[in-house]
Amino acid sequence: MQAFLLKSKIHRATVTGGNLQYEGSLTISADLIEKCGLQEYEKILCGNMANGNRFETYVIKGKRGSGQIILNGAVAHLGKKGDLLTIMSFAAVSKKKAKGWKPRIIVLGKDNCIVTAKRGV
Image 1 (cartoon, one colour):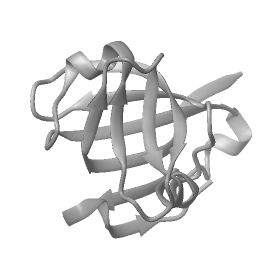
Image 2 (cartoon, rainbow, N blue to C red):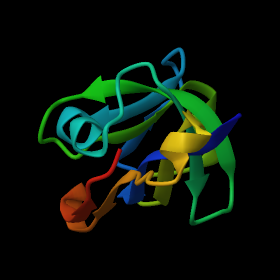
Image 3 (cartoon, rainbow, N blue to C red):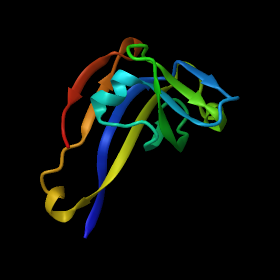
């Protein structure tokens, strides 16, 4: 048996822009991707804390150190610059591994700088 558990989470990510013309995805600064254990093209679930919208998309790398969180394509309609997002990915984990499972979580503050980081997985 497997359980689907939280693998990675970026909490309180501030949207820095949007691009309706892009084909889709969420651009995330490369350093933030690495810190929370995401990888490019990984499926993510996002919750917009400003309006309650939830959406699935995938990760693309933004410029390292830029703090970029950019809504691309259709999801650009679901938020605006300044909105706060919770960005999550999940993994299928065996029952044995699930007992000691710890996700990698980062909490962001001003300019999408990391305030706290909990290293798991």
